[in-house]
Length: 113
Image (cartoon, rainbow, N blue to C red; front, side):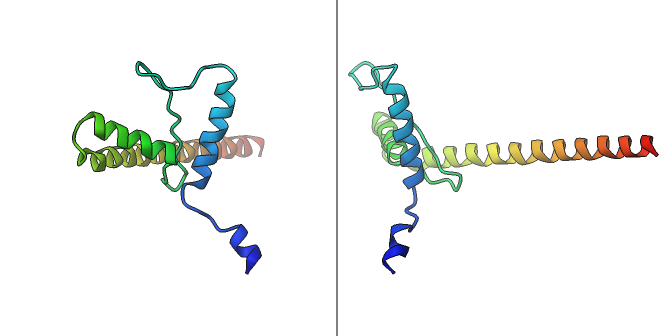
């Protein structure tokens, strides 16, 4: 049981690791410390749609800046729609590539006979 607990998935943990990797990478080249004038936020989302802790903080900050806490739900909905659109585009592109490859393979095999 102890071994199983070591490998238990925690939602958002992979996105948090991605943010840490981005921070490590960009800290070498940029001052990523936020100032009153600007800040650099790293936004990571897992393939299952879970946001990193940093992403959630950013969304909460945007709702605070808008001075409308209820807008947080709208922000999450828009992110969700953007992810769904991206996935749909990727599936469509993959299907088009598959269909094109199959047609080309069929043409070449027909021509060889």
